[in-house]
Length: 341
Image (cartoon, rainbow, N blue to C red; front, side):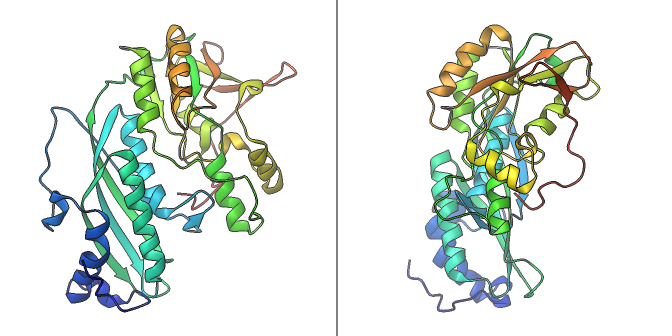
């Protein structure tokens, strides 16, 4: 379809619902996300369904919107796809809504749309409906994105009430890369040749591998440790429950680049967000099989068993240090990393 847009910058006209809005949809969005449901341009989409659905929604306000290893577009797909996966779903459909600030570059917008299209294709999801609004200059920080996702349930995960002492705690890769990468980019301290990039990626293949390897009822709960990182997510598992989780610091997979960034910024990798990692609590007899399959899956090469469910100090998350001591890992207090997703 011919690109009829001649402007370099987005204006309020593109949120009017009139001719300019149609030009934006027909010149940029429809070609990027072409599918039968979206092409109807209705207020909603009629979709092929399933007996059991999983559903999630999320909004993305990351600053800067482009960061090492990704951008707000890639993040908006991965964030919602991963939430569906962690609920035991196979992601199928996404809605996509933009809030654009007047004056935002069309070139940057096209880059973001291309990133969304590429990541949706990787994850096997279709963008089937959406919306665009434009706000006055100075009132939108460039671009915000909202996505909602629908998936088909492939496994019933009983949740934290099914966690038992002796269960294994697994992570699909290294800790804290997304939060560290975004904060270093924001601070201006990240060099162009730095190996530190976000771990942002869809978890559909990793979660499917884990569920297939575990068999029925072996996986208690899955979660992607985003805001608040691994430590906060595990506290959500243990709060007011009759068990604790003990992590072994020597087993935590943390990149040297993340360690260096956290030392520089005064952060703890255990509280830094991940955007492409899966936390799993599973029956101990299934742990090796799950780890083996996840390690064979792209993005899961550094998967590790990092802890065990115990009965000591119920409701707590503990960290066993290399010298044999232990300390309590509390839930994140305050905002360590604002605007990272």
